[in-house]
Image (cartoon, rainbow, N blue to C red; front, side, top):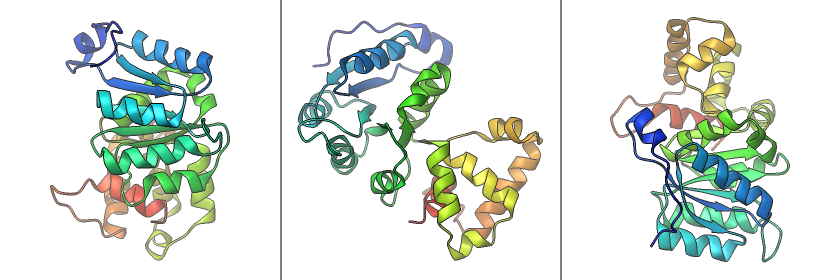
Length: 232
């Protein structure tokens, strides 16, 4: 059964959706409890806390959360144990979204986590937690099946990797695709680039066409575009 953490009601009252059920895993007790407090203040339910990778996997099996927030480096090995556990959760519990926090930008970690499906995946620097509104937005977005990739690691991949279809994108389209990878909505992209939402929609449709992404109910083209950007 889930833990007995109280669940504030204001998130459901504000959005009409039930609170997100979260497992928080970090060996740093202050950060772990701080993240848990932020989530609870935002109206979500922290159903489990874990300080090492085996405990994280146990909590996910036991509580079946909507999302697990995971530190890359955790006991018992204090290497990439958290990342390995997160990748295992992706394989064994496909309905559980994963948001990984890292102290340093390591694009290879993000690529390992994504594999061939970017839905319900996030990879952020720990410093991003300081912007509470942005962090909570990222958690909610990933839990809903979207993405939230750190702008720094996206920029690194965009600058370092090119595939033939991506070469057909204009500079503006590549800029829009990078912001999609960060998890931004069309309206948020429009605000950041000082363009109209209609102009952004045209760029997005151009991206889909140039990347030859199918327009079917079985595929989320924004997620497929992110996978293409990541070079998978």
